[in-house]
Length: 137
Image (cartoon, rainbow, N blue to C red; front, side, top):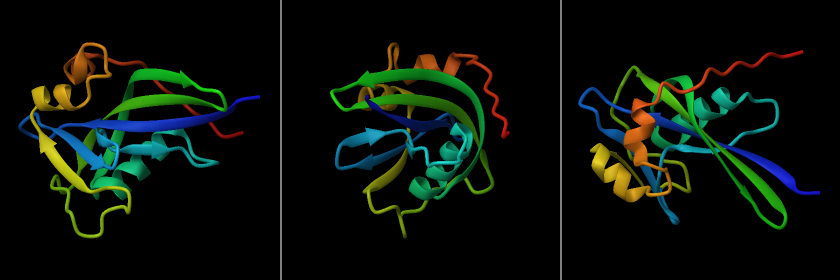
């Protein structure tokens, strides 16, 4: 049986329309990471964004889902739109150990750095997305 891993990302823009990206050893991506046990997907997205980029966000609509099924792991990637709360400037001091750089970049640069989104980040920004809800039993 394959192990399922939920990975969350946030698509955050600032007041001038730039996209927040993080760079690690694998290259550039949206801030995000693996959901921990007991977390909802939006809670994980908010936590990962704070850990990686040191900004606090309010998570909104789900705008993209992708899956990669390997020999041992079934990864499910979820991208949520998010809005900044408070300070919009990420800072480099004390970044997550896996993060080498955090940057605000124009949308076309984000499209170039992350070509795996069909139609680019531009399309995700214009998507109304889907609703998401979670409850605890």
